[in-house]
Length: 140
Image 1: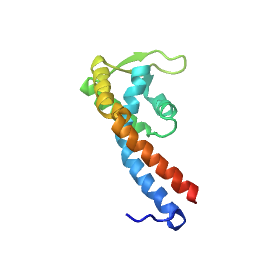
Image 2 (image 1 turned 180 degrees about the horizontal axis):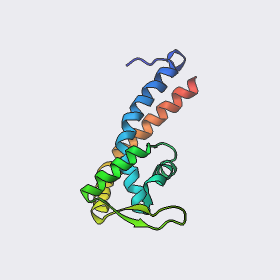
Image 3 (image 1 turned 45 degrees about the vertical axis):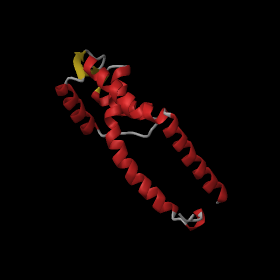
Image 4 (image 1 turned 45 degrees about the horizontal axis):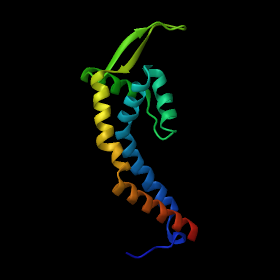
């Protein structure tokens, strides 16, 4: 495969392709980040987007409608539970937390899909790619 010098590449095109890829990738990851948050602590729907942005280091965000739909779907599936709690300001809020079934589901997902990146063969491939990116950047 021939190497194309970085100066000849259209970096705007790379950024555009990356944005499209991340858009699809992130839609699939909202469930992961939402369940991860609800495993750590109970939360009400309105605060969830900010909390997900924080724990995902700004890589994931979702509109409130997406979060409400996901919570309703997860509650119907039995992976999320909710309860009404009094608020210091305003009406009672519905707090969501991960059920035992949700904890098991999240754990299985992490074992099957996240820890895979720590396996020697995959980790080695990732490091190789990052070294290639570094060497391309240094040539520029």
